[in-house]
Length: 154
Image 1: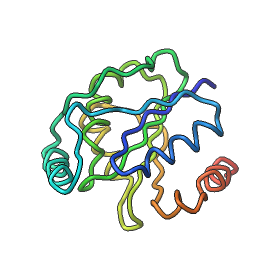
Image 2: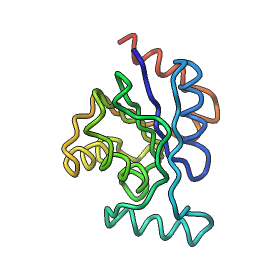
Image 3: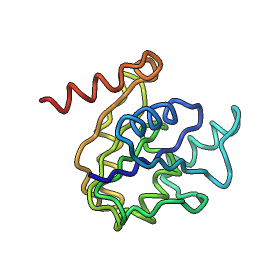
Image 4: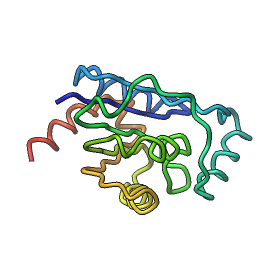
């Protein structure tokens, strides 16, 4: 199955998750770049404001076209209970080209991946096949592949 991994990362956790999974699956990996990056404390606050308001931002054009893949895995941090604005923008522009979507979110244990998934599905009419929450500590420890293997064995 040909897979494209699309991610947005402000601090590096989502990038680490994306590259780990991409290498394990031998898949293409696309980093979304926001035209106005959310650097520093003020950038973080601006990003939270944009996320809460469910605003779309401008992203740089992606290198890979999702219509060329059997499945697309979206990887997003949780920003105030929602997907990062760049991911929302990607979904808005390209979700109709995706055959099968999976969503991996990076947050804290008390975050609910279902809330992010429900928001994307209701806002954009998506059909997300699977949603999984990873914590930054799981990513740092390198527990990602073992967790994915145990999930696929079930």
